[in-house]
Length: 187
Image (cartoon, rainbow, N blue to C red; front, side, top):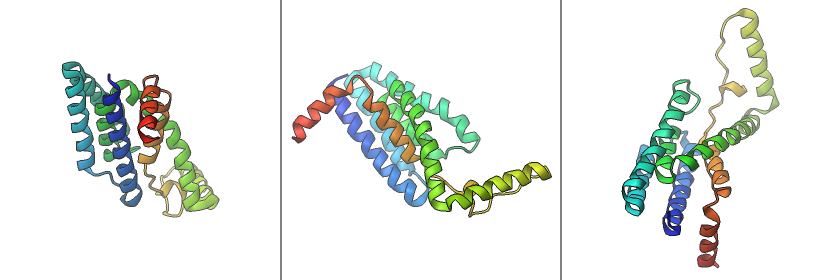
């Protein structure tokens, strides 16, 4: 992998994440066009720089994202936009960085979700959710969450996935030379 390819991949992935975060926070949706652009760029860049091996790498990253995240979608823990975005990031960055991004993204998602829910509902929202859970257990009946409680909140997950990607990139051994090259251009 050349430094030019890696710099292009990182720049495009950062751009895709910035757009995804903005739209996810605003409308709780990630546009299909954005995900398709990420997928197309992933296959095009990897194919251009590494021919068949690059296309295989992009395909493995794309498929790994689907294999890992589709069951999560079935249980309604992530939206389809998040999954399609990560399929694009997998095609762009490859399976190894994708796997680490998802691992760190889950950890970041736990923290960001708790903070966002606390910010929106306060401690009373968490207490209301715990009371509802107690009532569900005691009555052996499911009660839907109210909009003012923690469990009733929709949490955008694109920021957590982007944080996971940033952490995975920061510990990747291939990236320090790209950072030095980028700082040379910018400085």
